[in-house]
Length: 167
Image (cartoon, rainbow, N blue to C red; front, side, top):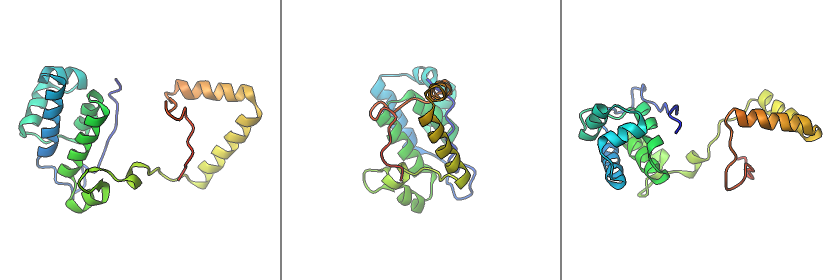
């Protein structure tokens, strides 16, 4: 499992309320029960010290973004979503939570989930240039694909790497 996930939400921003993370602790406890895990099992799966896990579960220590990132590597997709949603509710001001999460379901709003950073005009030109070069040179395309895969890119298993909407 990859443990180098960098989820650096606004933990250093003054508006964050990082005194406790009770909702996150509750979701994490439910995930432990759901897997039939002890704290040592979660420690092994997440790479977080068991004593730290104990403090998180008891509410003695808030769950920071770096620990959240490690916890989600140990959980399934549904648990990951619930944990991140709870963490956002625990750490962000109410107005920000309303902007990020969907009402009663607490799922991430579509516009937040699909947001991608914009490209500079130079980056867009470079991508267009590469696309043209790869389309006209099969050998270059194979080399580019090999380098891309070696760097860690994996196609989406559903779309096979094809994205239809670049909004």
